[in-house]
Image (cartoon, rainbow, N blue to C red; front, side):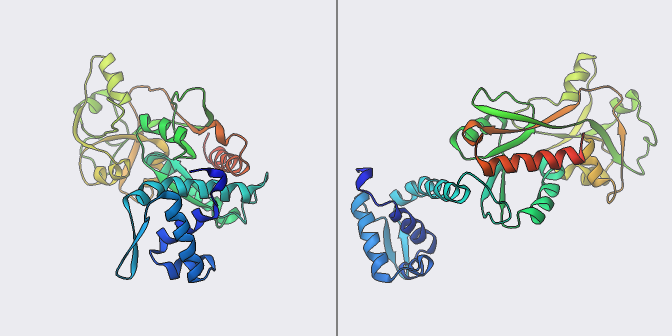
Length: 303
């Protein structure tokens, strides 16, 4: 296919038919007549040498080639819309842009609620989509453009990925208020005798606390391991288990769950959190606005 001979407006028609699964509704979506939509579809079929959409009852069903094309066409349209929308500047109040952010449970608990509150006030039509990804997957997603940004702990992504420090946090130990043996302080002996709920993250082989205890010649007892940090405080509140979680996460649950938090009996390095983005977004006005907004949200709430 010669791109110079291809009408890029046909991609808009492709997207509308895919979303509506009906030529009439696709025409209404684009304010085009049925003959105009049918003519555009025929041009698409000729260009791709494929039926693209096949009538099945009252719907136009996509062919296998259409399913292969849809994501790339979606990206082209989103990038075009973003370019035309920004035009060298960005008006958050008028923007309808969607940003794709990779984050685990921690920033979803600690950062996201305050970010959404800020967006509701200053950018009411800007949308956020979050994605859970492994540490290895985040780099690829940033490079491929699947993510606009990642918020997480310190990580080496390479020279093509920018980073910005956001804030620090430290781990605490949580337990239920009426725990039979732990009250107002937590000794190392109590810690080692207790049973724990651990957090399993596929790309982290061993928790920081377990590595530190191993260096000291100790080992704690982990009876239950979960993959979602958000479940840990509630599980702790209904058992005699202890758990290590970040202080800012614990602070979110302390007011409404019957749990307490105490410092760990051994010292660990503080956790540092950053936002990461690919260099293609470095001069994007909309992306720059989002970075500044997230930085401001974090700097006013956390240290």
